[in-house]
Image 1 (cartoon, helix red, strand yellow):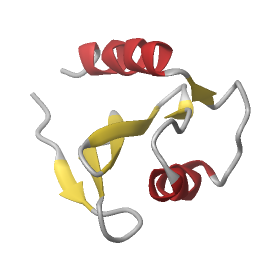
Image 2 (spheres, rainbow, N blue to C red):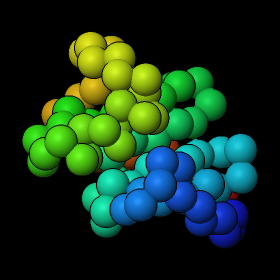
Image 3 (cartoon, rainbow, N blue to C red):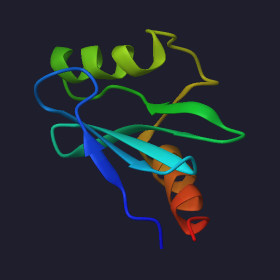
Length: 88
C-alpha cells in the first residue's frame, strides 16, 4: 500500500494527496476536485460551488475549461474511483 503525502497546492483551504508517482488527488476544502495520474493527465470536476473553489480548480488545470479536462460530479467520481482501485 502506498501511503500518501499531504501538502497544500494553492494556499489556504487546498490539499493535495500524493500517492507516490501513481496518483495525486487535489482537494478544495474537503472536496476532491481534481486528480492527476499517469496516462490521464489532469482531470477536474466542473465547479458547482463558488468562486474560491473555481480558483482552486483553475490553479490545477490552468483554467482550461473544456469537456476533455472537466467533468460533472458523477463522471469525475467514477474516474477517480477507477484510479484509486489501481493503487497497490
